[in-house]
Amino acid sequence: MTDASTHAWCNGFVTEREKGAPSVASISFHLGTAVFDGMMAYWNGDHYHILRAEDHLRRFRLGAARMGLAIPWTVDQLLAGIHELLKSEPKGTQYVRPIAFRGGPELWVTGAEGRPVDVSIFTVRTDNHRDLDKPINCQISEIERISSRSIPGQVKVSGAYVNSFHARKTAEKAGFDDALMFDREGHLAEASAANVFLIEGGRLITPRLKPDVFPGITRLVVIKLAADLGIDVRETEIGHDDVASVDGAFLCSTLMEIRALSNLGVRELITKDANEFKSIVRAFRSLTHQ
Image (cartoon, rainbow, N blue to C red; front, side, top):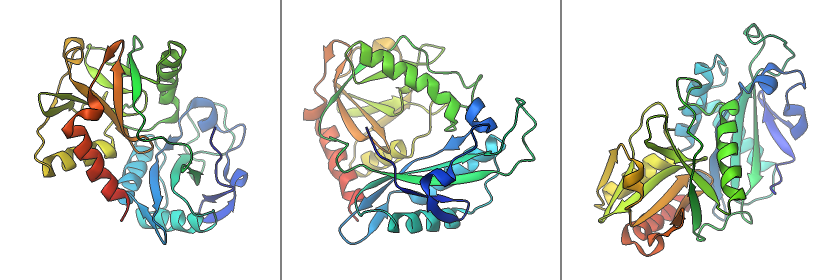
């Protein structure tokens, strides 16, 4: 279990966390129409380094706008709010979660457009909750990645994560840590809440970005690091047969960072020993300690 910060930044002010919560009658709460994001604030002894903060906040604002939640604060104002909030909490590496929603009461599926858009930001201390060096195993899930024809797949819409919850809980019941999901066309999309890279023949292979694949910022960082290291990356369609033949694989996300897969289904992988994986992990961790 994780404990959220005692305070939150809400609509321009740092306040007690629960004062930044929506009404129990909030339309966003009932319909899952809130939009959120997440970023890591790394405590490096005397300062916080927030990895790709502006990219995260731009994505947050654009995603919210796509759902009709026009955020009235700029990227700079949101970032200043995050730093103000971090000052109110004990020092340590924190996961930062901004969320936009309509907090007031509403009944109908549509019709709340006149209500104000609220933004709250809280943090979760992560120092003692992540074993980043421990490999995880993944189920090849029978649960399909939700189609972008139903819900925007490139926006962190809160209601869409029922799909992620269902896939991961099903995997956990079967003895796995996570699940790889395929889209309606049978192509690999992502894990429950992370992008995926496969290792084969000294190169990395990852699903190409399309509406059913989330455009993770950590995914972009990995691709850039691979280019800097001279590691070939191929973005392409990946089927079940392709997954069955790889040497290794890893997941990446803001909170997970980069995690080796020890197994895909019942098949063991050599991810932790792959030079490509080790090089990228070293390069990534150097970014977090600036």
